[in-house]
Structure formats: C-alpha cells, structure tokens
Amino acid sequence: MFTRFADKFYLTHGQRSYALGCAAIVVLTALVTVLVMMGLDAPYTLQLSATNYTYWVIFAGALSGGVGLFIARGWMGALGALGFARAIVGSIIIAIVASVVAGTLTVPVGGTIYAPLLTVSAFMAKPWLAAVWFGGTLGGHYLMSSLAAERSDGEVYTPERRLATEELSALSRANLYRRN
Image (cartoon, rainbow, N blue to C red; front, side, top):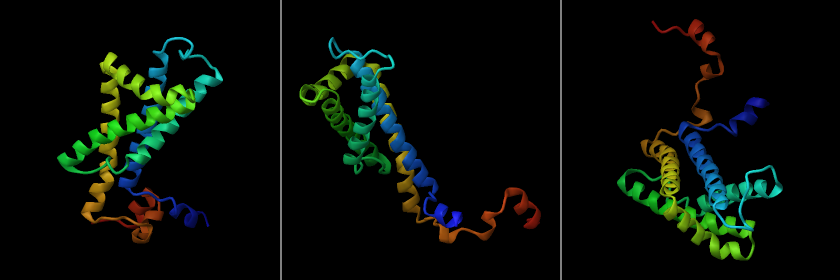
C-alpha cells in the first residue's frame, strides 16, 4: 500500500533538481523582499523583530517568488547559451512580477506601484543585492536545466522501469547479487 502511494511521488534526478531550483528561487525572493523592506523609510521600515508584519513580509516575498517563477517558468531551465540568455530575461521578469505581487500584499495601494521602482533602486544602490539576486536565480536556472538535459537524453526513469532489486537494501544487494 505504501509503495503504491510512494510511487506517485517518485522523482527522477532531473525532477528533484528542478524542484530544488524552484525552492531556491522562492527562498531567495523572500530574502530579497526582506532586505528591500529593511531599507525603506518610516513608516514602512521593516524591523527584524518577531512581529506578524515581519512574518507577513516573508510570506508575501515567498508567495510572490512562486508567482513570478510560475509566470516566467518558460524562460528558466533551457540548455545552452541561448538558455542562459533566456534565464537572464527570466530573472528580470521574476524580479518585476515578484515585486508587484509582494508590494500589493504588503502595502496594498502604494506597494503595487512603488515596489518595482524600489526593487530597481535597491539593486542600483546596493550592487551586491543585485549580484545575489542574479547569482541565485542563475543558480536556480542551472538546477532547473538538469530536467531539460535529462529529457533531451531520452533517459526517463519511471517507476515502471525500476529494477526489482532496488527494493532491497544495499547490503542485501551486495550479498545476494554479487558481480564477479
């Protein structure tokens, strides 16, 4: 029963890398959202204390990163030099969409308009923040491209193609099926 249930969630190496790349971009977006919000003037300055607003900004940043990645998913994860160029455009799209969504969720009226401007100005004022953003999103692109490489090789590893011996432990496989 559990094996049948677990087979539904079996991920190949490329799919695991793709999921890790998506998660890395979502976490990076939450981090950049908090760093941009900490640089604002009063009354919107974010203090790193355990308040509900701080948690809301982190959640809004992560949610906006997921929305931005969903919208720009066609730009990320392609192979080759053209794939790298597409990933740069995808990183910009994710940043703009994520700033609009996070701005709307944190400060409903003014945030929608000013959040993309604040993100661009924060990237220009703090080049290290832009380097972290583009480095993180291009790292996520690299992880996401392993799924495209796996599919281009034609090696799709499905649960139906698993060997019967994979259910055994490594010790059992070594003792029962020795290679001479």
